[in-house]
Amino acid sequence: MRAVLFVVFSVFFSFVLLTGCNNPLEPSAGFVLISQEKSWTFSPGEVGISYKKNSQGFLRGYSWEAVIDHNKMNQILVRLSQEIDVLPASATLELGEEGKFTIHPSADGKRVNLHALKELLEEKALTGGSVEIPVKKILPDVSTADLEALLPKGLLSTFATEFTKIEGRTENIRLSSEAVNGMVIAPGETFSFNETVGRREVERGYKPAAVISGGRFSAGLGGGVCQVSSTLYNALLLADIEIVERWPHSIKVPYLPAGRDATVSWDIQDLKFKNNTGGYLVINSSIEGQKLTFSIYGNTDHTAGKRIEVKTEVHQVIEPPMKTVQDPGLPPGKKVVEGGQKGYKTSTYLVITKDGEKEERKLSQDYYRPVAGQVRIGSGQQGSAPLEAKRDHPETSVPEEGAG
Image 1 (cartoon, one colour):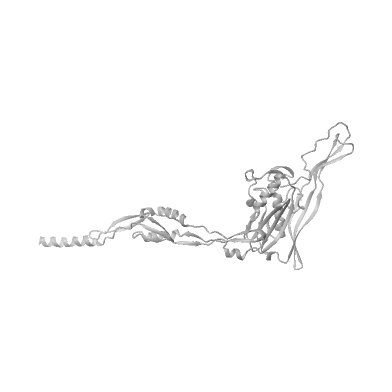
Image 2 (cartoon, one colour):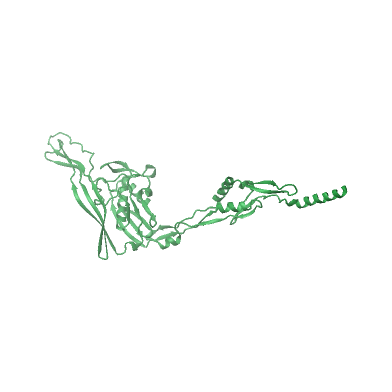
């Protein structure tokens, strides 16, 4: 009987050893993650997967359970995605010679679908093997087709001002106009002069020049920049572009009529406009001699059939206060007028005529304060030196410029 039992148990345990009592094979040895022609190999532990052996009871063997460290899996998959993700590139527009445009085509981007990739790894946690990395296509904001459909069709407006050749001021005009030149503004986009030109700093090449501050001239960095913003402002008006923000100088500038200027000052005063034309806008600036010109290219349907004019009404001319002083260095009765500039109260309108109908839009109501001056009258005392000119008051020939 013992011999029989020995034989039975020997056969049973041999069967257990051969069949493993339904015990599963060892868990995954690793994963191969594949994206197009590239692949990455990870052990289970590297992607946050470990294994736990669970007993099923006597004669029933055991089972394997995958334990997921979600934080560790997230970290490794995010690092992996940074090698695969590609940002989309919008189509861009470049204005070349003779007003011709070149389109630089768009490119789609791609991004790893991290949620789907985690699910795939968790499904294969016990078996391992190859996993195709799920990737989502990311479209650019502006495709080549979008840009082609909204390509500027022609010239909307042009406007020019002239400036006096003064070394620092001329360089500031050149730098700031070049910063704006070639800018492309998408339909509905708002353009900021300050954001585009940037801070007016010595490190960026800007020079000291006369600026207007508090209604008088003073030395400052970036003098001349406001002539650029003012010239651009007038080109925008003549193209019927929506002005979002514009500020007048505190005193009238010599290069434009009252009510037509647009001063800028970093973090305080800006020139902003919104592209309301239904197509892309391109800004072109140029300097020839002492002439600064801005040209606006865009959707010619926006201005088709329109005659656009800017009209300024002067409500009041304010004479400057003049101080009279006796100057023993001048011949009797001789007068020398120094400084002094009139002030103005104005209203400015955009006048659009189309199909015989005229529309007037009020753009601004501005006040330009007068600038005090002085009159020296000769008292005729021979041998006396003339009084020194009072430099607190600007000469009318000195270029005026808002702080920039």
